[in-house]
Image (cartoon, rainbow, N blue to C red):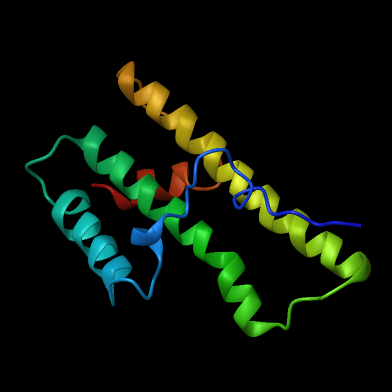
Length: 127
């Protein structure tokens, strides 16, 4: 049985070289803090922009979770465990992809969207 990761088989390559953590050292940390300090904490931007920036940060943290679990626990190499592992990866990726598309569409229409899992937290973080 062949197990495939949805994000690796996506029609457009979503994991390009700039997302490669070894391409530019600490680039993801710089972008994370730049987004947080430059947009979310900047009172010059509207609450709408800061709220959506905070949701983007929380979605990015969700994207890190599979890698964190992989570093804490040895990933399975075959059998039912591998099926569950790949399904978890694909579920998280699909959730993030759908959330991103939904949020972009809502933002283009000027509507505030509370994404599941991250919306309430983002709303509480932005003052």
